[in-house]
Length: 222
Ligand SMILES: Nc1ncnc2c1ncn2[C@@H]1O[C@H](COP(=O)(O)OP(=O)(O)OP(=O)(O)O)[C@@H](O)[C@H]1O
Ligand SMILES: Nc1ccn([C@H]2C[C@H](O)[C@@H](COP(=O)(O)O)O2)c(=O)n1
Ligand SMILES: [Mg+2]
Image (cartoon, rainbow, N blue to C red):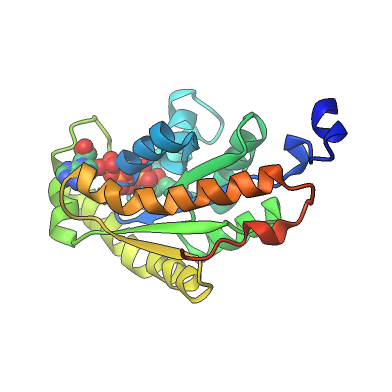
């Protein structure tokens, strides 16, 4: 805005958004913890799975293909998912996002980098034992077509073979925050809270800055 320019600050839309990827196996608690981050830290939550399910319920041209893919526990073509994420980011007034359940594969990750032209600032990984994830998914009761024994088994295989390499990639880049996702929802959030408290301080510093220096947003473990 003019006011910001007068103070020598950067207008909001010219700043790159702060992007957090939220990863973890099926039922590890990504959506549950994202809701708490939204409530406590004002992020916008974009669940890749929810964006895809919206395409099914709005009868979009890709709806039938997405439904078949989700039923089989497989991964929807990356360009479809990335475009949904891009549209959601661009239509939001917020500048800090949780992208939940993405990237699921190395191909997802590369397609995001190619289309969006950026990497995430940080990546959360909810690390949960398989038997606990299965128990949570099978008692979720939200009418999801993929919350059944057969599809959960396939989703777990896809997680191990395709998502773990992505998690390792971000670990090697020093961007990964691993959360031990066992215990109550509140106990788990107490591991998440300090990460976002530190992010909040960093973003405040950046907001107050007159520089458009992206390096300020290279977040390091406090
Ligand atoms: N710490 C917890 N202890 C017990 N149950 C939990 C915990 N966290 C979440 N749940 C429950 O487990 C189920 C799965 O949680 P959630 O939907 O947040 O997982 P998710 O990682 O988003 O799964 P998906 O990848 O399948 O979307 C939900 O019914 C949720 O209420
Ligand atoms: N990047 C993504 C995210 C999700 N999907 C599909 C396949 C998943 O099994 C399903 C449900 O996702 P969830 O709500 O569990 O995060 O959606 C995908 O293809 N690509
Ligand atoms: Mg979820």
